[in-house]
Image 1: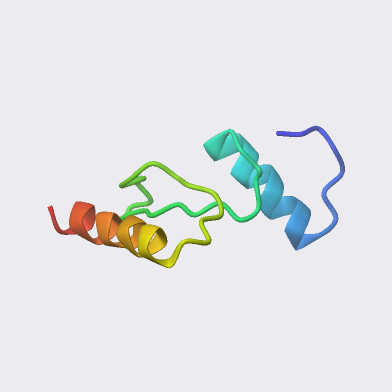
Image 2: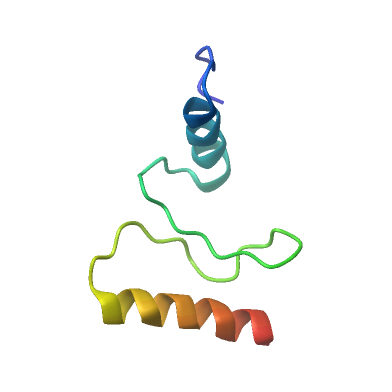
Length: 65
C-alpha cells in the first residue's frame, strides 16, 4: 500500500492498517465480527475510562445483534 520496503512486523501492521482503514494512527481500535466485518466505527486513543468502556460495549451490542 505504501510502496515502501516492509521489513518489520510493525511496518507490516501499519501498512495493513492504512490500506484497510485509511488510517495508521496508533493506537487504532477496530471491533470486528468473526468474519472480519467492522461492527462499529474505528476509534483512536481514548483515555477516558467511561468513554472507552462505552465504545467496547457498543461493539458487544453490535456483535450480539
